[in-house]
Image (cartoon, rainbow, N blue to C red; front, top):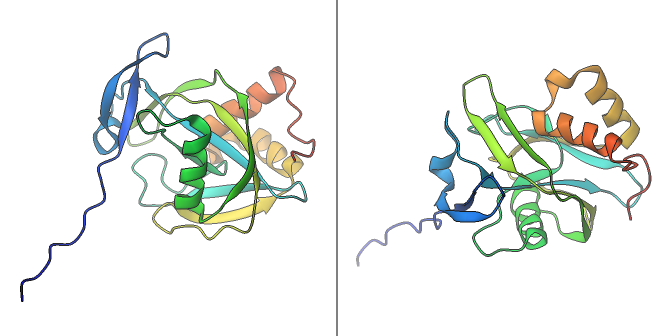
Length: 189
């Protein structure tokens, strides 16, 4: 009897973008986030419970960038050729063990560049979505250290009071919601 080699997860790729946010190629996700990260496609999603609370997560301490930082519900990268909503649903299942109901793109042109304390750079064109949870999360430990359902007003106040305690993309998104007239406190069904 011969021993079988362990199954390897397929290599994830990200979509590289030019300055106009047009695809120009792909790169291995495991190699793209460095001190000189090229612009690439991502997404960010705020997941709401039917009662109006929003899910916040604390990134796993094993994350390459911003380990242990509190952020919005789920973030990730669409695979080459994958639609944004499909990517949101895939990562919500993978990271949070959570199925989603309605998914709506709310900030289609969101982009940011930020550097964490270790020098790792995020450089992303990152459309932002709101989604409705269809159950309770069962997060994967390698992705999420902690999670909480909170009232949107509590999250807005916490980000305003202590922006340094949250991911830079969440802080920037909160500012964009306000400047674009998106009522984060309204029920999102």
